[in-house]
Image (cartoon, rainbow, N blue to C red; front, side, top):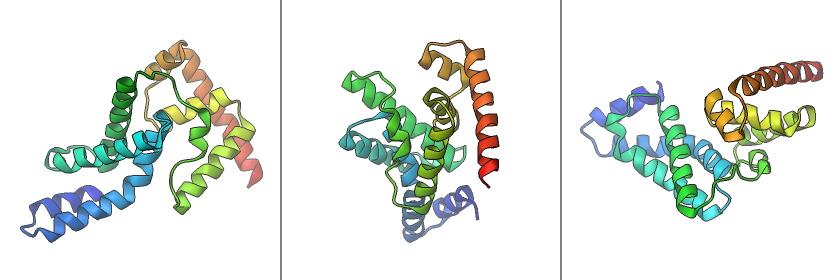
Length: 175
């Protein structure tokens, strides 16, 4: 059963137990992703924890109105809340690039992700790695990445596709 169907079922059920169990399941499943996205923008651990908490409170408060995938909603919400916290704190930089290498997760997926990022860093320049991560992890458009980096959209797009192609060759050679 997909997360979206599970959520819809829980919200329709007359039981108090079902929604609570579903929300707990979704929290455990997506907390590492939400924390990683928040850590991408925020440096302070307390701010990251606040962003994670606010993301899930927002999701649980508006669950009945969610019309996209649970993952997409949580990722977009985590990004927006993190940016709002940055703005509130008067910060506007991209953060420490090493934040990508250490997502706050003890799961196997988190460890595999850290290894993949480390492998990318060995094969590609940091600017290429950051472009790939902004596109894939932060779900930013090429236009947003270009504005953030102060470059032309075509330059960002070219860098992204060339970097992916180069990393794919390196990755396949190791396998």
